[in-house]
Length: 319
Image (cartoon, rainbow, N blue to C red; front, side, top):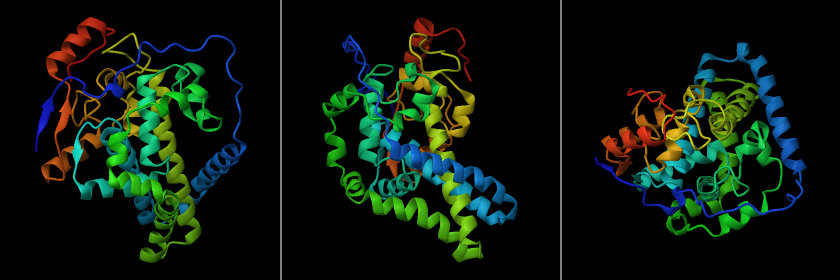
């Protein structure tokens, strides 16, 4: 069980200050109506699920919560901290576990998620950022999924170094079989388990642990792109938009320390506060304790303190 303190080693983690948005009119926004319809139906189903909660078994509600946390870890501990930033190393069993969790989350396969996230960090708040928060809350929250990507996003994404993802057989296996894995993990398993184990109705199983849980998981992740880029303090770097947002930290199991994360993206904890409101850090630490993960990267304390003094907004607290 090791933990190292260091400076960033991934060039994709570092904002590209040489990038300049193209002058002249922006390309036309092309709406993807299929996505609009599907997202609308999903959220209508989630609202309907709220009315089914009184009729659901307590075990079903607990199962929905477990599915939410499991799928969230597939994003936070998996696609984000492990595969996007390589902030720690995971054994094969842990990578397989996180891949199943990622398929339950259904937010694009690991390869595509990590590629887009690296583009987000390298070109944050520009035309090359997939969910550029400068374009407003709605766009950065869900709108970016309802329209065609800006050409700069596609161009810059195609030029990133992704050999580590291509070399990971677990990542590429999931990419190859992503659709059936999503069908199984996101829709079939959450629906069928309550029906098989405690005789819950398939109707309730489909709407609460499946649709409502899925919609909540999506919005928890999207809030990192939207709310955490707009509201909160900036104790580490006042010159960037990402903020420290306590509500997002809670809902996204540790991902709301966003000013810290964009300042020190290589830090496996995405925060200097350890387990505080950070279930993902707890999970990674547990995996290290049992020998399934290793080599967690951390920003050195003196580096953090120096950055707070140099570029922070004065709101930093020691704990």
